[in-house]
Length: 359
Ligand code: UT7
Image (cartoon, rainbow, N blue to C red):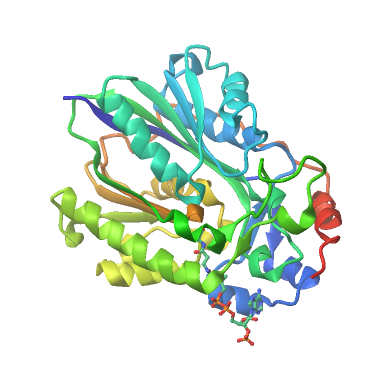
């Protein structure tokens, strides 16, 4: 039997920090409100392209797996903030990495994109279509976040996380999965027009930022993340008490806490880093997984659950039996270049663009 083991992992966060105190200067909000309602203290803002972050995360994941890029069969890049409509961002990443023997594709399931991609890549390996796949979640949400709109400015940031999947005969990796969507609810969380629905012409700032009906999305996120999480635990033949670590999408600390409560999971068995990076959409789960490994929270043979929910409205869950590797084989010194610009200089194009909207 063929299984797909996670053998490498990595992350990349841009150095520029957008703290709650900075947001207090931009919109009518407060550190106290943001902390109490979301758990977020800081997010990161990219000064470069998304695939620069993806490349750095991927180089760490490749090093951890002890692989060279030319050994990859496929690159799957999960994003809802691609660099262009044509080509897919995965092509830029393939070129940056010189993954000369790989195919490459983007997968957009918004905040659920990494879990969708992980399940897809695992299935391709199990089916014999590939032996080594790089799966990356990367977002430059600062391109589509209006940092003068307090409903969304407080939530979103940039970053990338990556894993390597390799074929193995050991019964590890993806044990059960669920993919879901309710396409009748797209208006609850969307960028109204920033694609071919628009008319040809310059981007309109009024329709080019993420809009969110927060309470309704919150409610649905709690329901679907807990229901799909419980479903994959059961489908894997596990009980909730056997789950060693839940690695959830990081959208709101209160969503994570509510999902843990509904699942009946011991609260010490969840990984959360939302305070540091906010919601980086498809990048949250691989960044969280990487940090959980760095912090020694994953042991060989552990039972993990990934759950995510996002625009679409999509959700996805995976029951994952960890293999044997918990230490990287090699390390990489790849990093995102430091910028001389201040936070406000990095944010200036965003603020200049969205200032044209009537707030
Ligand atoms: O990744 C995809 C999934 N995304 C999500 O799941 C996001 C889900 N939604 C949420 O995380 C939350 O709904 C938010 C964090 C967006 C909002 O939190 P909330 O507890 O639902 O707040 P609310 O919208 O019910 O607003 C409560 C109050 C309102 O004032 P009044 O009407 O009670 O006087 C808002 O006007 O808080 C006010 N408010 C704010 N105050 C300070 C809303 N946003 C802010 C703000 N700062 N940024």
